[in-house]
Image (cartoon, rainbow, N blue to C red; front, side):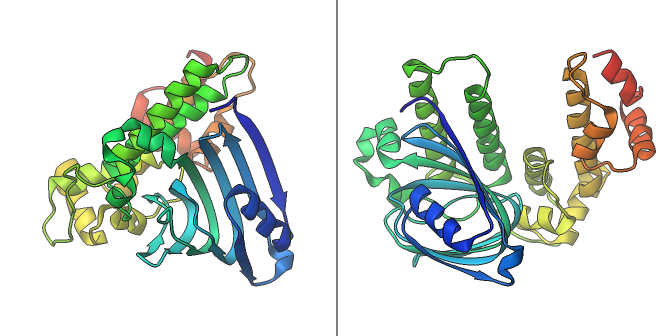
Length: 317
């Protein structure tokens, strides 16, 4: 593990994107569908050696064949769709899905469709060091389906905590801090993406069940920053839209989208309360960030939820 090294890269040239992917991941064959004039590829990385945190944005439909990665790669889909086939599984993912990437030892194909991804890579040596008794067998225990909303929430919060810790200005990340960060991420990866934890597998049914609500709440709490519809939430909970709506109406007396709106209101309030005097924070900017484009409607919903106006919260944190 070494001090964080941050790199940012953007291009409109598919050949440069192919070269970047080869440098950041492995050798690949890349093909873009559609007008190359509309193509844009972005890749940002915080690299710590045995551990990295990436952001990847690909604007067009792109097919890529990639050599084996040789490490565990965990992905959160922020926008768009991704398809992944490593010869063992053929999977499709959408916004909010959190999953383990391809088998570390296999070549794989992936399709990116206007995709924005948050990617975490961990060397197998770091993971094996958490549980030496496995003798390198951790790969055999990987579960390749998207994890439950509860596990996704824990994973997203851990990534957010660690990346926030690494980006604090003026704070030195010495060997003890970096070692602790590496062990934390490796342990969380084992807990989140391997078998043997007794995780339940939800299924669709006509009747609403509390478990559906629990999974829906966890998914929404983990992903309020994503552009989600009710179908996205239902897919994450592995139920039909009707079953999801019945569950929320029966047990919470609300709808999934209304619950998501309340989560976003809570996030907006926290941001307004945390704003420092003179830092330029405005009610309009915070509202827009959390999807409230109509200022008067945002103020009315905010006052109904918290008993005060958003401007009052901003003035009196």
